[in-house]
Length: 123
Image (cartoon, rainbow, N blue to C red; front, side, top):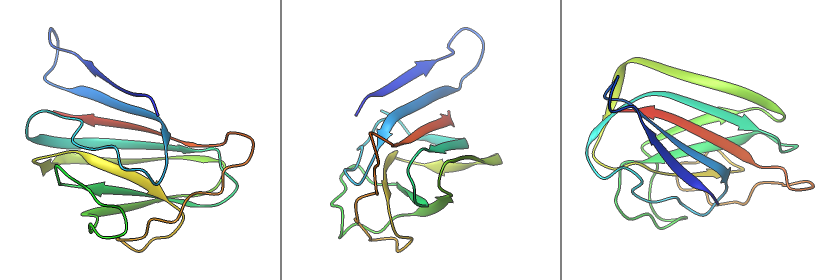
């Protein structure tokens, strides 16, 4: 996993959270303060549909914690979900799994290093 955060302090109050290898291991509490999510871009290079799970939790136990939001991204595609008014959160934690169920923790089918790349625009 390679999670990074890019801030636009001089121009905007927004930042981009990026995870280049999202899988069924939760990326936990990446933002240090409450805010709102305005856009989620998911690029799936795997051979199956994947489900992005957002958890508004500081600690996530995959297979037990219930996702707050679940977004689908089809195989070999990029899907962008825009939330114009923003979705408020206290914590940003997330993972990607093979199934839609909010507590699913099934690993993705990764062929030759295929992954889900996640970009989140938030405040």
